[in-house]
Amino acid sequence: MTLKITTWNVNGIRAALGKGLKEWLLTEAPDVFCIQEIKARPDQLTVEQLDFPGYEIYWNPAERPGYSGVATFCRQKPAALAIGLGESRFDVEGRVIRSRHPGFLLYNIYFPNGQRGQDRVEYKLDFYASLLETCDSLHAAGENIIITGDFNTAHTPLDLRNPKENESTSGFLPEERARVTKFLEHGFVDIYRVLYPERAQYTWWTYRMAARQRNVGWRIDYFLISKPLAARVRDVIIHDDVTGSDHCPVSLILD
Image (tube, rainbow, N blue to C red; front, side, top):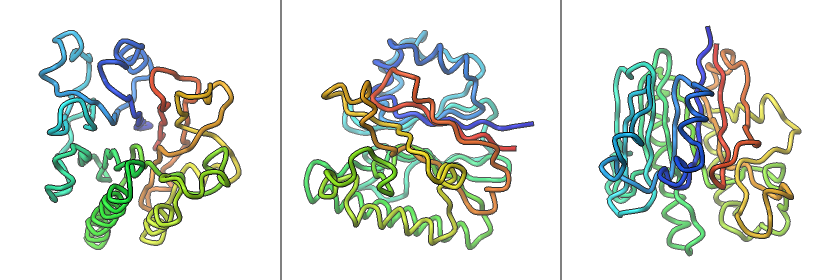
């Protein structure tokens, strides 16, 4: 018996639905499907667009129209659900859904992008710190955690095609990478990198300069999991052949 959790930054759910999102999901059939950057509220979707047979959908759209937002699709109803981090400056942007499943808590997160200036880099760093504080408390209480979604940070030089050229670009700044390292020092593992320590594979490509065709990408969509869960992991699959967004889906397979 395996459990499959898939994450995908869809860069607009309405656009992605027009590019085969529903067909792909129903074929792939993960037990839990976490999407980010939905850029819509459910009341902006048609009945047909909202019809995903076999799934219950939980939404956290941003207050600002057409921006950010996450949604979690579940085959089995979670035992508990929490929306946001509990801090209004983050929660107005619709970035977090936490759901409880047998044996773990699952965070579906769209981490902030720092490319709009230093104030957004600081906001992003504060977001990471706030999340880690909560995770530290949960770990101390004996919880196991899976954090998935668009981290908007490539952790190591192996995680992007052109590390040297991007040393001063948000998404690969030393202080952003240090925040990811901090999670690994606090009881988490980047399970893809544990399984594939030398593999260069990406999850995001800019739409410019035919980057995807040339595979000039970044790995910024992750599964960070509590160390005790690592023994249950069978595989992590980056579906880099799947189009429909500037990101591709990533799946975690658990026993």
